[in-house]
Image 1 (cartoon, rainbow, N blue to C red):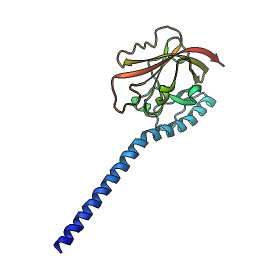
Image 2 (cartoon, rainbow, N blue to C red; image 1 turned 90 degrees about the vertical axis):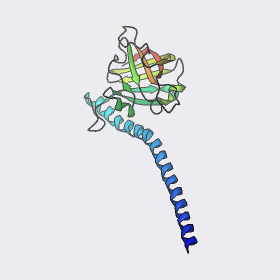
Image 3 (cartoon, helix red, strand yellow; image 1 turned 60 degrees about the horizontal axis):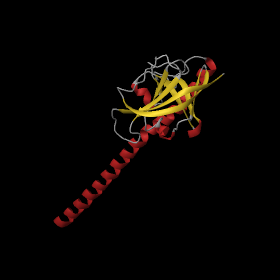
Length: 200
Protein backbone atom coordinates (compact mmCIF):
# COMPACT_ATOMS: atom_id res chain seq x y z
CA UNK A 1 0.00 0.00 0.00
CA UNK A 2 2.78 2.37 0.97
CA UNK A 3 4.61 1.54 -2.29
CA UNK A 4 1.48 2.32 -4.33
CA UNK A 5 1.10 5.70 -2.61
CA UNK A 6 4.75 6.52 -3.32
CA UNK A 7 4.41 5.50 -6.98
CA UNK A 8 1.25 7.57 -7.29
CA UNK A 9 3.02 10.53 -5.70
CA UNK A 10 5.96 10.18 -8.14
CA UNK A 11 3.61 10.06 -11.10
CA UNK A 12 1.78 13.13 -9.85
CA UNK A 13 5.05 14.99 -9.28
CA UNK A 14 6.26 14.13 -12.79
CA UNK A 15 2.94 15.14 -14.28
CA UNK A 16 2.93 18.44 -12.40
CA UNK A 17 6.55 19.11 -13.39
CA UNK A 18 5.79 18.44 -17.05
CA UNK A 19 2.69 20.63 -16.86
CA UNK A 20 4.69 23.43 -15.23
CA UNK A 21 7.30 23.26 -18.00
CA UNK A 22 4.60 23.39 -20.70
CA UNK A 23 2.90 26.37 -19.03
CA UNK A 24 6.23 28.19 -18.62
CA UNK A 25 7.06 27.58 -22.29
CA UNK A 26 3.66 28.87 -23.36
CA UNK A 27 4.11 32.02 -21.27
CA UNK A 28 7.55 32.68 -22.76
CA UNK A 29 6.18 32.20 -26.29
CA UNK A 30 3.23 34.51 -25.55
CA UNK A 31 5.57 37.18 -24.20
CA UNK A 32 7.79 36.92 -27.29
CA UNK A 33 4.77 37.38 -29.57
CA UNK A 34 3.15 40.16 -27.53
CA UNK A 35 5.42 43.05 -28.53
CA UNK A 36 5.37 42.38 -32.31
CA UNK A 37 1.59 41.85 -32.19
CA UNK A 38 1.12 45.07 -30.22
CA UNK A 39 3.26 46.93 -32.76
CA UNK A 40 1.21 45.64 -35.71
CA UNK A 41 -2.18 46.36 -34.11
CA UNK A 42 -1.01 49.87 -33.25
CA UNK A 43 -0.05 50.50 -36.88
CA UNK A 44 -3.56 49.49 -38.02
CA UNK A 45 -5.19 51.84 -35.51
CA UNK A 46 -2.79 54.64 -36.44
CA UNK A 47 -3.59 54.18 -40.11
CA UNK A 48 -7.19 55.17 -39.40
CA UNK A 49 -6.04 58.17 -37.37
CA UNK A 50 -3.67 59.17 -40.19
CA UNK A 51 -6.49 59.13 -42.76
CA UNK A 52 -8.71 61.22 -40.45
CA UNK A 53 -5.86 63.64 -39.89
CA UNK A 54 -5.22 64.07 -43.62
CA UNK A 55 -8.90 64.65 -44.38
CA UNK A 56 -9.60 67.11 -41.54
CA UNK A 57 -6.22 68.75 -41.06
CA UNK A 58 -6.54 68.24 -37.29
CA UNK A 59 -4.30 65.95 -35.21
CA UNK A 60 -6.05 62.62 -34.59
CA UNK A 61 -5.20 60.17 -31.83
CA UNK A 62 -5.23 56.48 -32.76
CA UNK A 63 -7.07 55.66 -29.50
CA UNK A 64 -8.57 58.00 -26.88
CA UNK A 65 -5.82 57.70 -24.26
CA UNK A 66 -2.88 57.94 -26.69
CA UNK A 67 -0.53 60.83 -25.95
CA UNK A 68 0.71 61.01 -29.55
CA UNK A 69 -0.59 61.35 -33.10
CA UNK A 70 0.75 60.11 -36.45
CA UNK A 71 3.11 62.65 -38.01
CA UNK A 72 4.43 60.97 -41.18
CA UNK A 73 4.36 57.81 -43.25
CA UNK A 74 7.79 56.37 -44.07
CA UNK A 75 7.80 54.35 -47.28
CA UNK A 76 10.72 52.12 -48.31
CA UNK A 77 9.97 51.03 -51.91
CA UNK A 78 12.95 48.68 -52.33
CA UNK A 79 12.06 46.81 -49.14
CA UNK A 80 8.30 46.91 -49.87
CA UNK A 81 7.73 48.40 -46.40
CA UNK A 82 5.90 51.36 -44.99
CA UNK A 83 5.33 52.46 -41.41
CA UNK A 84 3.59 55.35 -39.69
CA UNK A 85 5.76 57.55 -37.51
CA UNK A 86 4.54 59.31 -34.38
CA UNK A 87 5.00 62.63 -32.71
CA UNK A 88 7.51 62.41 -29.87
CA UNK A 89 5.49 62.11 -26.67
CA UNK A 90 7.29 59.66 -24.41
CA UNK A 91 9.64 56.70 -24.58
CA UNK A 92 6.63 54.39 -24.44
CA UNK A 93 5.47 55.59 -27.87
CA UNK A 94 8.36 53.64 -29.46
CA UNK A 95 6.37 50.49 -28.78
CA UNK A 96 3.80 51.64 -31.36
CA UNK A 97 5.98 52.96 -34.17
CA UNK A 98 8.96 55.08 -35.16
CA UNK A 99 9.04 58.44 -33.42
CA UNK A 100 10.02 61.78 -34.93
CA UNK A 101 12.21 63.08 -32.13
CA UNK A 102 11.03 66.38 -30.64
CA UNK A 103 14.47 67.99 -30.94
CA UNK A 104 14.71 67.33 -34.68
CA UNK A 105 13.55 69.45 -37.60
CA UNK A 106 10.51 68.58 -39.69
CA UNK A 107 11.22 66.35 -42.70
CA UNK A 108 12.30 68.53 -45.62
CA UNK A 109 13.50 71.45 -43.48
CA UNK A 110 17.19 72.35 -43.37
CA UNK A 111 18.95 70.10 -40.90
CA UNK A 112 18.19 66.57 -39.73
CA UNK A 113 14.81 64.96 -39.09
CA UNK A 114 15.51 62.11 -36.67
CA UNK A 115 13.26 59.04 -36.61
CA UNK A 116 13.93 56.42 -33.92
CA UNK A 117 12.38 52.95 -33.60
CA UNK A 118 13.03 49.55 -32.05
CA UNK A 119 15.34 47.14 -33.90
CA UNK A 120 13.06 44.15 -33.34
CA UNK A 121 9.82 45.68 -34.65
CA UNK A 122 9.43 48.74 -36.88
CA UNK A 123 13.08 49.21 -37.88
CA UNK A 124 14.04 45.50 -38.03
CA UNK A 125 14.30 45.76 -41.82
CA UNK A 126 16.94 48.53 -41.74
CA UNK A 127 19.53 45.76 -42.19
CA UNK A 128 18.19 45.41 -45.76
CA UNK A 129 18.43 49.12 -46.64
CA UNK A 130 21.32 49.95 -49.00
CA UNK A 131 23.06 53.09 -50.25
CA UNK A 132 20.96 54.68 -53.00
CA UNK A 133 17.65 53.25 -51.73
CA UNK A 134 14.73 55.65 -51.58
CA UNK A 135 12.91 56.65 -48.40
CA UNK A 136 9.68 58.49 -49.11
CA UNK A 137 8.43 60.64 -46.24
CA UNK A 138 4.75 61.59 -46.54
CA UNK A 139 3.43 64.35 -44.29
CA UNK A 140 0.37 66.56 -44.28
CA UNK A 141 2.47 69.09 -46.26
CA UNK A 142 3.28 66.68 -49.10
CA UNK A 143 5.76 63.93 -49.88
CA UNK A 144 9.53 64.10 -50.07
CA UNK A 145 11.89 61.43 -51.35
CA UNK A 146 15.23 60.99 -49.64
CA UNK A 147 18.05 58.74 -50.84
CA UNK A 148 20.25 56.73 -48.51
CA UNK A 149 23.84 57.99 -48.51
CA UNK A 150 25.41 55.81 -45.82
CA UNK A 151 24.96 53.99 -42.53
CA UNK A 152 27.10 53.94 -39.41
CA UNK A 153 27.35 52.51 -35.92
CA UNK A 154 27.85 55.07 -33.14
CA UNK A 155 27.57 55.35 -29.37
CA UNK A 156 24.21 56.74 -28.24
CA UNK A 157 25.93 59.74 -26.62
CA UNK A 158 28.37 60.34 -29.50
CA UNK A 159 26.10 60.08 -32.52
CA UNK A 160 27.18 63.33 -34.15
CA UNK A 161 23.54 64.06 -35.02
CA UNK A 162 22.93 67.81 -34.80
CA UNK A 163 19.35 68.36 -36.00
CA UNK A 164 19.60 72.15 -36.31
CA UNK A 165 22.98 72.27 -38.06
CA UNK A 166 21.59 74.33 -40.97
CA UNK A 167 22.81 71.76 -43.48
CA UNK A 168 20.80 70.37 -46.38
CA UNK A 169 17.57 68.49 -45.56
CA UNK A 170 18.39 65.00 -44.33
CA UNK A 171 16.83 62.24 -42.28
CA UNK A 172 18.50 59.92 -39.78
CA UNK A 173 16.85 56.56 -39.06
CA UNK A 174 18.11 55.40 -35.66
CA UNK A 175 17.81 52.04 -33.89
CA UNK A 176 19.84 49.95 -31.44
CA UNK A 177 22.91 47.96 -32.45
CA UNK A 178 23.59 45.10 -32.95
CA UNK A 179 20.37 44.61 -34.89
CA UNK A 180 19.74 41.02 -33.78
CA UNK A 181 20.73 41.45 -30.11
CA UNK A 182 18.16 40.85 -27.38
CA UNK A 183 19.58 43.14 -24.70
CA UNK A 184 20.00 46.93 -24.90
CA UNK A 185 23.45 48.42 -25.24
CA UNK A 186 25.14 51.77 -25.81
CA UNK A 187 25.51 51.46 -29.59
CA UNK A 188 23.14 52.79 -32.25
CA UNK A 189 22.74 52.06 -35.97
CA UNK A 190 22.07 55.20 -38.03
CA UNK A 191 20.93 55.21 -41.65
CA UNK A 192 21.40 58.61 -43.30
CA UNK A 193 19.45 59.89 -46.32
CA UNK A 194 19.45 63.21 -48.17
CA UNK A 195 16.52 64.97 -49.81
CA UNK A 196 15.93 64.30 -53.46
CA UNK A 197 12.46 65.04 -54.87
CA UNK A 198 9.70 67.14 -53.34
CA UNK A 199 6.17 66.24 -54.47
CA UNK A 200 2.92 68.16 -54.19
